[in-house]
Length: 242
Image: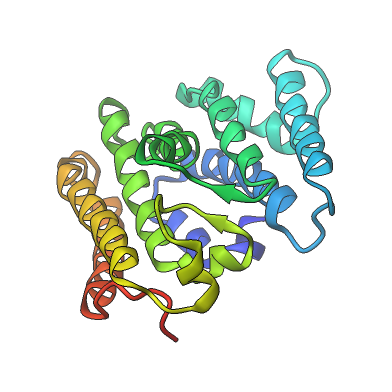
């Protein structure tokens, strides 16, 4: 599944020691399936139907954790958790954020945005921390995941609007509808760019905690996303321009 849907991430996984790769495939399989339920080409048409499908997927994890017959992906994930001490309760938080995406999204303030990111990127980061060799840096890995996600939200404002989603608080819908970024719009985007940069700076210590090949991959990802923020800044924070 990982090779088929995300070959770049699949190649990145090969940088990690062989014993942890099956666990990463299992984590990917669980979150990818949830994402496909919400955003995939065959997603169900109604928000309530998508939420019910997420409930059914989470129930498969509950069955696997109880030792009952379940889908192979959560079954593999439970085995990985037993082997590597993964905090699978984080997936309940993750699924709550996935349910938010089942309907139109309007993030009202920064606290709500942080709750969403804590449920999605940060929750997965906490699960991944032992697998990348940073079990004692779980919260920093979680915050690094939030930095990547926030940079994505900044970059993808137009694409998210096309899905009837506004993740960055305070963006005027009139600007999104017209495709013209006013001063207030730019100021709010600039603020989130600054927040993402701060998250990247605050988590630099994670790099030193992981082994060389993983460190190289993390630094490369940081550089790519930092350049995304640089491009937004050079465009005077107009993420609506073609």
